Image (cartoon, rainbow, N blue to C red):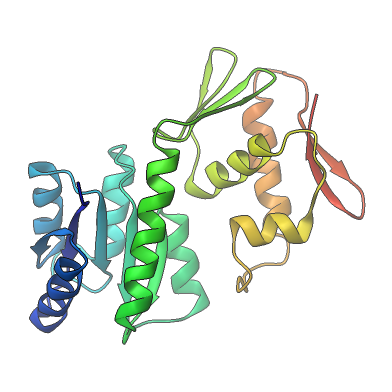
Length: 224
């Protein structure tokens, strides 16, 4: 069965265009015109993916993302926006969005990104990653170290998932930045070190042995 998508935008020209494009691709499409309407429709029928405009009446798109993530909803979310600053993109990713497309967009690119997110979500839905006494459920995005549950932000999740998929393998700084933040990331130069610190604090909160080790001048390795 094809996926059910929720398109959220207050511009009828955009929603009509996306409905036609996505229906042609075989998707089931629902439309919401405000943030509150998007949350209501998500509860009524859980979508497989949300295409979400940032500038909405009432709750804006970023507030919708935040509410869904706080509620534990991990539905893939692709943001649409006319704003293309680095700060806007970083904020969207940090609160839990999965991808970002700038208006005006090429329909072919939008469809390709939707297909990629759906494929990734389907692969991850039931995958359990583990190494030593650390376990990560990629469907729920819940991590454990032994019996202890660890709550992760979207970026912390991506970083831990990368390490758990490559245990005992030295990962260079450039590889980690590419996989977690993307090649076009233009934020703070020490963002990786900051998030390594966050993750170490979480994994070692009860005095557990260190698993994330620094390889000076190269990068990091996840090993006992």
